[in-house]
Length: 479
Image (cartoon, rainbow, N blue to C red; front, top):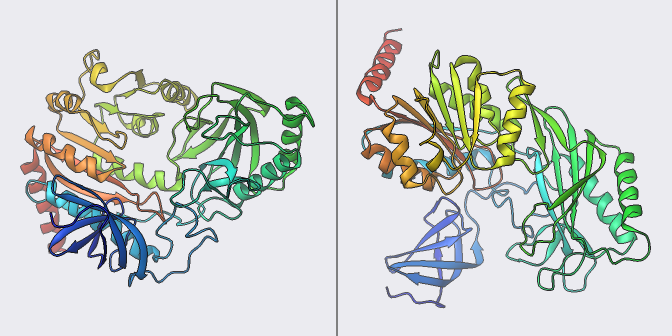
């Protein structure tokens, strides 16, 4: 390639591939520049050239994209590293994401399939039911802050006052916690020295029920002599309970994490008030969600996502369904009332425990959840599936696990994907195994960002299914 690392160029972004990869051509050579939008004129430097592929680092937007017509929802836009689509009208966000997914699927699909476009989120703001905030400072030796990482920075934390993708209760709680910490001169845990006390604040708020969990995560290094740690936690509990909120706090927790990695987790958790879970409602079912357990972050969007998956699955009467990568068993419990049996497999033990608790909570008796790696667990299950639902993590499915899934030879496989790139990759082995992509639909779970969920139906008897679709189309034309 003629382009070399460190060289600076200007160019116009021709398109954006998932996720947020702006495509620019320089003297006929393709350059991928992250966080660039189609139509923007940008200045960038070449950061990496490898195996005939070049990646650029965005330096400056010289001219905005024609689709950047909206006023940002959030006062932190541009400084915060998230919600990069805020200057794009929501209808244009949907079109952009839908086009990205369709290009991937068009390139991966063998033969024709039905692309059903994208379903919008029921709301494009205040939709998240979980957020993780970090303690730090906005500049070296600056005032204690509590919020999100500044754009492009690993260390600097932007004080959040009015995040647009969460309920205002989050902003009220953040303000309360950081003001109390400043009042008593508490320090944050430094990433380099591993000294300090405050690490993260995790807030969950159930969209449907309004129940709120607040979890303060610290190290065990309490060094402040003004008051004791126990006294501080008591003041935190009392201040939070006094807040005037839209929802209601049902649990206040304190977790200790001394791991050097900057991950939000706990080695120990104490309940300061209430309980260590909240209740959320989804499609008429109720779910107990603990502070660290996985649950779709957009509750109303999850109802759309799982309804779409249920429609794609079709008839489930008297059938055994495998729900692989089942998480807390949400889709399994949605399908259970109209299935003979649902078997969920999930590697995260806490998620499996939550799934079992929730089936008991919802009086569902035909769900079984197994903890373990799908690759290994499939060899131990005596039941044979009639249908398979796949909802893997972002990296997709292990090739050997995919071989075992294909070997069951079920008529229908529904794949729910949070990463269309790994979905497109996994379509290759599925199609080689005799499956054909029948239809696909996107569901927007993450407005104002570049992320999207995709649901696809793979059919073993594709020719019959296609004939059935054609008959339906013909009958519509006769009406």
